[in-house]
Image (cartoon, rainbow, N blue to C red; front, top):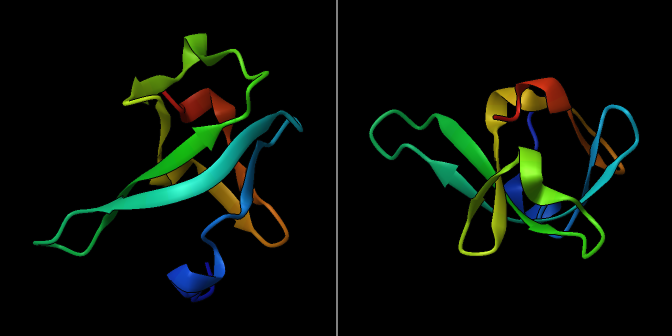
Length: 82
């Protein structure tokens, strides 16, 4: 994946690879010891069924390894989100 600055992706819309609109990127969880990106913290769409997602403090957590593309949207593979 190409280098992307975090300032360029905050408030980007996040969608599943199947076209499901998940929400808007709110924050990123980083392991400060290794610098590894752990989770995307998403402010979910109101209409999103969050049953199959990890939820913390009303935010959806999506593992960073689920990210497939970052362009106009952040695209994530839904099968690997739990």
